[in-house]
Amino acid sequence: MIINTKQIIDITKVKHSKINEVDFSDITFGEIFTDHMFECDFIDGQWQQPKITPYKALSLEPSARVFHYGQAVFEGMKAYKDDTDNVWLFRPEENFKRINISAARLAIPEFPENYFFEGLKTLLNLDREWIKKGLGNSLYIRPFVIATEPAIAALPAQQYKFMIICSPAKSYYAGAVRVLFAEKYSRAASGGVGFAKAAGNYASQFYPTTLANKKGYQQIIWTDASTHKYLEEAGTMNIFFRVNDTLLTAPTNDTILDGITRKSVIQLAEDYNIKLEVRPVTVKEIKEAAQNGELKEIFGAGTAAVINPIVGFAHGDDTFELPEFEDSFANFFKEKLMAIQYNMAEDKNNWRYKV
Ligand code: COI
Image (cartoon, rainbow, N blue to C red; front, side, top):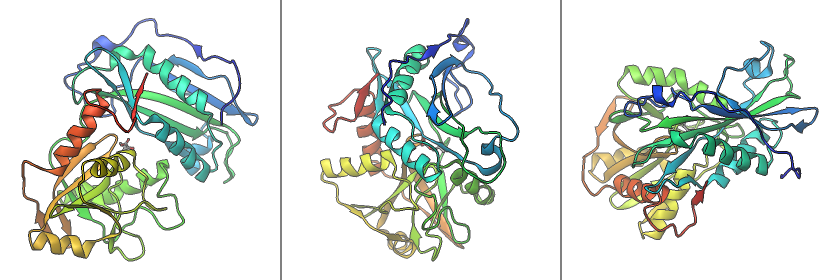
């Protein structure tokens, strides 16, 4: 949907940037936000004039539906700066499509395409200084929609707020990541909202992940809710397994997020003739491959995490450590992806988008 209007974004700039207070060499993911934010309210059945204002706290009634029913969806994107100060996004039209797919599942109205892209570009241009050069530096972009209507009947809201906030980022996970294969808890069930970036999908993982953390595992690899036999995704990342020289990953369905990094890895595997099977992957086959030395790698793929190698996993009382080796697929895909994202390599799939 494109709202055909000449309405421009109403911009209020900060008087003083806070950028000089930030130590860009020491960044924890998602704790610092840039000077400005984008917002647009849905009232009386339509999206209103979009605004960019200084980043600030919101004022919402305690009865706003988002607080009671979690009617909220979000996206994760990144902006990158190349050596000549150009700013790039990576496949942003995929994020745009997905936020509206997520929104539709949560009965949230569709956000117009031109508002999304104009908002994004204007915001990034205002906060351009916050995007630092150098591989590994990026600006994490968080578009999201919340139900703001002050009414607590369990019904879809009539009022929403769409926002974009931005946060300078380096790596998402600090240190080696070990994962636990889920046996009891589930992230998503068939017919549910697992495919959507619904806020509640993440909140429901916090408690089981805290239990896993206590056992020394940073993440859970979720399995299918009915049998716990099939490996699905890690909640913050999609998951790939390398058995000998074949890459395996689960097909997306209504319980697995259709990750943009995931689909880019699949395309790169095709481009570079890496054997890939997109099919249901069982806990049993991965444990057997680990036992007989055929499981070479597990890695996660996501916007925030990029490509994150997993050094070990557990299922029940069985624990496995994975060998470290130089020519890993994880490093290969990470290098290829980043070279495209930072405008250091040819982009034959047209994934880069200049801001
Ligand atoms: C992303 O990679 O952008 C995600 O959505 C993961 C997030 C929960 C940090």
